[in-house]
Image (cartoon, rainbow, N blue to C red; front, side, top):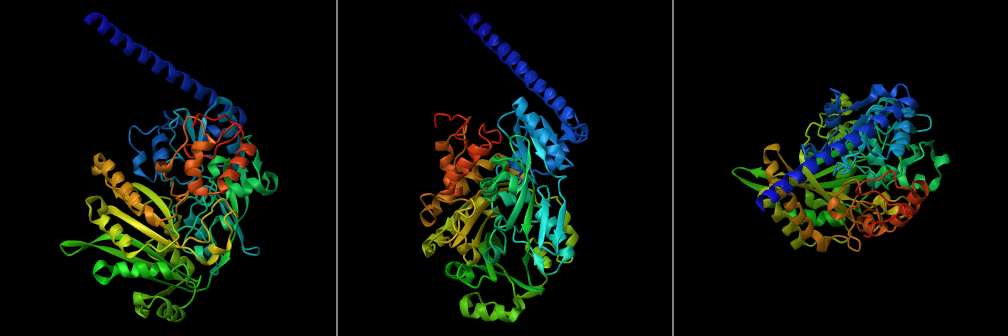
Length: 534
């Protein structure tokens, strides 16, 4: 009996080995055919195509990975990476991948919180890395710009400021974030209350659809143009470039950052902030950044009130004395500077180092997990106190909460203006993040458990039915697609990101990509593609 069991065990191993080898050979053969297909379509594409045998493969793969959780040996890697230098090189990738049944993951700058722009659980995938499609063309006369999806926010801001000191663009604070994903998820920054989202100021786009066609706003139609401005572009095609409307900024803006600790009534200040920040003049943006801080031999909880005012110091002081005197803002706390200097200031870069905006490298790449929420009623004192207590736990040492005020321009857009539904009725958004170091990766589960407990704790105080979330702070914990996308399964996370706009996104997806070629773990499903049982 023992001999038979041993024989069966070895037979199983042999079967697994043969199956694995044949499966691998099959996939590799697919990619040989895929590469041949690419070369037949575009003879210069081989120079920007990297297989695992290429010495540059790993460096290209890792350069734009912004979350070290996805650098482990167990993380699936693409069979091929393509870094097109011309927009004309993108349609062949779509055509050949579709023909050979290969998934595409499109990466702009790699800031997807769950790595979905460069990781797939399907081993038969390629990365279309848009890093070389990074041209920015500013038209001063029309106050517009065309910006390719591989550009970063920093390069966009730099190019605008190079041409004008009184024009800017309302997008994110982190300069290394890629334009492609940022705009397609909505995209907000410190002009959110004055000018809305980045997506609210997009006026045209170029996209490669599932049939390999390059379309602009006119040829794609208004439904698809609506969908890609906040609905997550990766569900609908490869967005090559965006045309944006630039906004006017004053010659000088005023900034301040004030820190307050528990010992300095931070709980009361945050309470007061909830009632002020969304209702104050739209020229004033005050966000709150909460973290644990060292105080001598002990530690405390510190909240940073980080602000930009689109005006001068005197008017700001007067406004703050009237609306938020509890913060105790003084003239010494304020600094006047140009808009482009304020971009550097918010990014934590010396304001004289403008060239740093062109640096694609993220200086502080870390392991992290993030989540998001929306608050529609002020969180009571006991709720804030309980939230801050979580920072006293060991995992809270490298964690943060960012509170971003809404109101102003955000109240003037309807929920259906774009797929981004978080408009009037939201006081502010919450962004939670917890970080850990490489030497602590074996305890990663503890950090993720901590942020999950924080998320559960705050649940009674945030939006509900659905509990809202921001798609650019992607979180697979709130739901993901199975082997096939289904409306029922995707609705679980889709309504949190898009609320009632989710159904329209599904209709657009069904129209433009009925066979669900562009897909990932949180992509919009097609009603025509065939559903799983979920």
